[in-house]
Amino acid sequence: MEIKFKDYIIHTQLPSSIEVGKKYIINTINPHSYCIAEEDDEFKSALTSSDILIPDGVGIVWATRFMYGAKIRKISGYDLHMHFLNLLDKEKGKVFYLGSTGSTLTKIQNRLQREFPNIDFYSFSPPFKPVLDKEDNQLIHKIINDIKPNILFVGMTAPKQEKWVHQNKSFLDVDVICSIGAVFDFYSGNIKRPGKFWIDLGLEWFPRLIQEPRRLWKRTFVSSPKFLMHLLISKFSASS
Image (cartoon, rainbow, N blue to C red; front, side):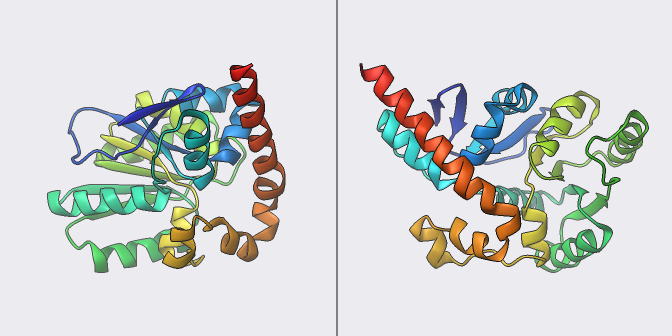
């Protein structure tokens, strides 16, 4: 199922299989990324050109109901990650993690081998730069294409990761590319993901804000009010 939200086509379901030979770019959208994209044309282009764009934020879920009366459910980046790991384990495929530090990638590998023993794990920690240069990208392309993974998970934080995928997707021999940011830290155990109680209440953001106030204050106290104001203006201007 798809629903149009402003300039975005949001998908409410994930694919039930991995179609070999057809490349899918999967991104997530939440109120914070929406607000960033409104001021960053390249980021917006990366999101709008996604083959699958999922609502990773209860704010998007509420907004679609408020604007269009549509009832959708949140699909988090973590849900996306686990969905494809389960598919890949059944198919005995290959996964590649691009991003984060060597120590985090090792933690991911150790957990992956315990939980999904049929998946072949590969990874690379790129240089920590605002923008990767041509030589960096050529090396990354070669490493990934030599392996030809079924799934590429990119964790460089938004909007850097989405822009990187948008710029480099045509050079990558991969079936599915997902930008999943903080999931690297959740799955590795670096950061504890809020429990089911908070998730079911639609308040997963609250414990995360307590855990990481310096990183997340802006999306809570700046982007969320800005997103709400944008919705109100759009709703009432359309009805007037």
